[in-house]
Image (cartoon, rainbow, N blue to C red; front, top):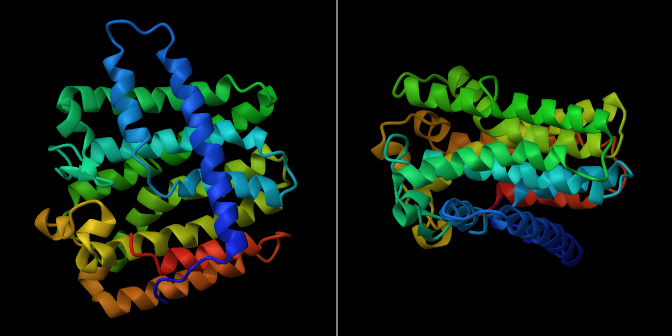
Length: 301
């Protein structure tokens, strides 16, 4: 499936959720500026990467799962923005010379090219720390809900989640088989998407069955999303992607697409998307989520 276009209603919904996220991130940025003096450059570096655009997929999923579980989206905004901070921290660090050594991100110079390596490292660290504080300070959430959200975010971003996946990606270059690749993707990509969907449900006070179903949806979506990223790294247009193509091969990384071939990778991504799609059956008013799932499979960036 290539270049699926969202319906008018789903396109409007996506824009609404992105705008909600961006507005709250801007508010949080203004709060962070208060009280900073000589160290204000760190907020500039943080905001440089945080405001660079991107799909805002994780906050969109958080807000939408809160909605389909009958919750007030205001209660999910802090979780949504915290996830985007964690995601942005990971991108800043991924781009560093000691990691993927990429000079461009979202059509702009990477954070370390714009602010230097030291400040980029600190900007990523600051976003990681700020994310948990954003949830802790939320005025709409109970203490129990905050604890559950922070536990989810910590687990998904740590050594059993995103960082653990990055460790495997760094340590096992050229030694991957399908099982290890998919395990890595489950941690490196699916974990934060899983947190996004589960945290949306938690914010809405959903029961464990719906929280679990949301996590299963995200697990499949994340695998499909990462395999599609692999394909785009081999076949995409650098001007559309906003970052260099072919970086995986240059860095000696095996991906699902490079190991199995592009057509097999496309087939696997499609199968995983179908599996993710099926996990949405237990959620009412899920039309937007269904469209978004298929849209992500055929994206060009």
